Image (cartoon, rainbow, N blue to C red; front, side, top):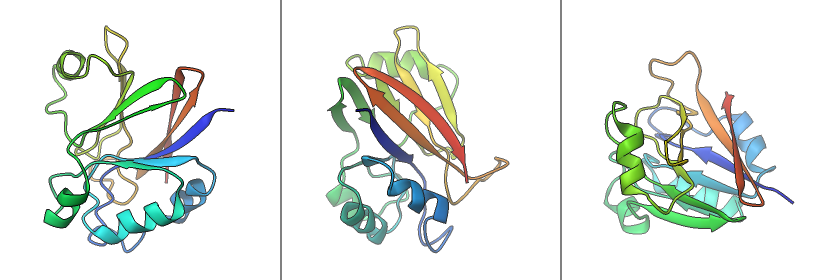
Length: 164
């Protein structure tokens, strides 16, 4: 049976919103875990997801204070359904991103990142899939807030960007 992961980044709670959108909460109940690419801002969001999801893989971001940095790594890794996943908050400028991430994450199949609030989906020359779910609470220059769904099945990964 495939593994479905809710992919979040840049939730910025409670600064950008008071809570996660209803559609994200509904999706949370239908997934096997959560990947969060940083900028939680408050520990309550981490605690909420830990209490509600069977698996939470997350990293600290540049807007996360000392308490979140004490609880979360800068880079998180997991192997699920034969897919090697890494999570970071920031990957630097979009120009040259694929080549930089190929060098930085040679033993990774999917790299989840955040920071920009701009959705991203690309595959490097080596085959590394780079995904950024945008933000479910702060769309910045995007037409809609977004989150992602990552489905893992027998070593294969598929990605869907979902508007809020």
